[in-house]
Image (cartoon, rainbow, N blue to C red):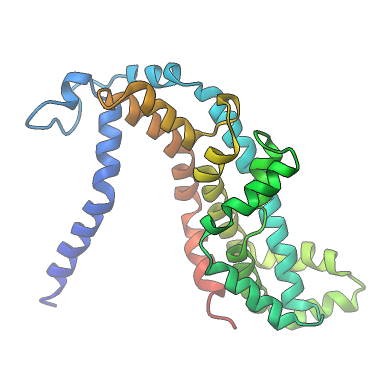
Length: 271
């Protein structure tokens, strides 16, 4: 019992480490320029101002960045999750040669840093004429070893009697997947969708490499453009732009967090 106060202090310290920068970003986005550089620091502005958001929106084509990020996130998430679900179903329920070896290769792909594949992917996209296109931004990333692993582990936790009953009723594999397996795997499916969407939304390196015009840039790359436009003198505008990028995924994560925790813990231990 004596250690409980120390545990609370430690938890508050960890929370401050993670939430402190987020709080400072939020407060700076609503501050007047004079308040940002004032010492001692102003922890919260006396009067909220939306001018920083207006300046950020005008300094770079954020409307186009939002559209590109939305298209890439939605399309990339749908294709990546569909690919992961179908692949995971095959590894969980179908019999085919070298099944275990192929799954080990997928697990091995999780150990390879993503930057290793940048050059081969770029050369392939360039040879197909997909530079500065949505296809070049989306198609190379539709395979996800991590999402496949999570869905396969979840499918293995489902009772075999349910899929056997579907087979007795004459359901094929696609119908069994759609009508039986996915509804029973909803927490894990939502987890994979959210993780994939956040990954697609925050992707920076690949969009920076495969696009060469502002019309095809995404929001993370747009922040770099905004920083170059504003320099290091106008932190209010930069923080406002950062908040515009952060807010959508943060809201989605807050809404789906209980599914994420439940999904990851539900199927992670099944082998």
